[in-house]
Length: 112
Image 1 (cartoon, one colour):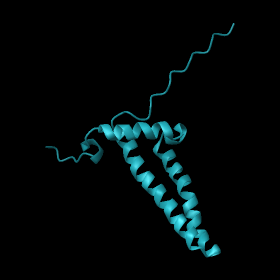
Image 2: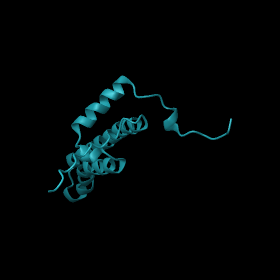
Image 3: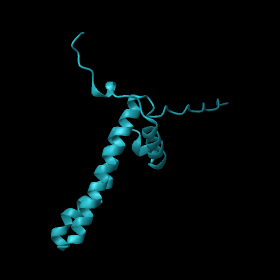
Image 4: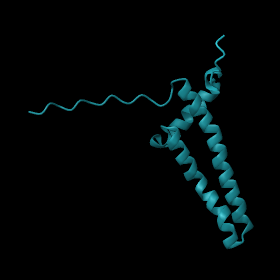
């Protein structure tokens, strides 16, 4: 033994059938440019969390309990979405299923 610890991602089993089905549903429904990289997925999360965040912090201005609860619910939904989807994308990247290989570009016709 060399004593070198392996990252946790290398010790995980491959995607199960249910996780692969979830991954294909997510990849088909979400906008492709926004899910290609972890950075863009974080930006998508921030976009989804922004209405809830604004609802929570706008509550003192409006003094509305319903707005506060809606803000917390929207923010929690964005956090749950991020937690469930990012794990699947990370495991798909580890299994070399994601990101998709770039499409071969068509060669431009030779100029006369």
